[in-house]
Image (cartoon, rainbow, N blue to C red):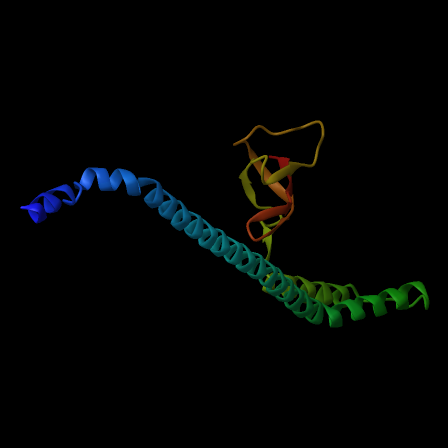
Length: 174
């Protein structure tokens, strides 16, 4: 019977008391796991921030290269007409030689054509009748400012690039 009493005295403790004894250890283990997860998350954040910065720099370089290539193409297209205009200017100013207006107009037309190929847009046409829009038109007379929607005539075309008005069209009331 002795063995029976020993068996009951050393009976396993219930789950609740075992859990309460192991609770501090379990909490410490959970805390360590959370610290490791936090360190991993911070490392991932650092790597992602580095990658974002690298991509931002690469994008700026690519954008700058693209812009430089577009400008180079524009300047290449404008080079010949510009040198021709400069030559005509030299003929008039330095050598006092007459220049045909048709020659100047042909060069100017080539310049305009090249600019339009590079997405510069002439807004309106000289003599065109339209309705005054203060966002797109500039009155030529300080004494006669048209009201929005009032009929006007375009005297100087406007200029836009990629939807942005660079120069408003000069207008006069009808």
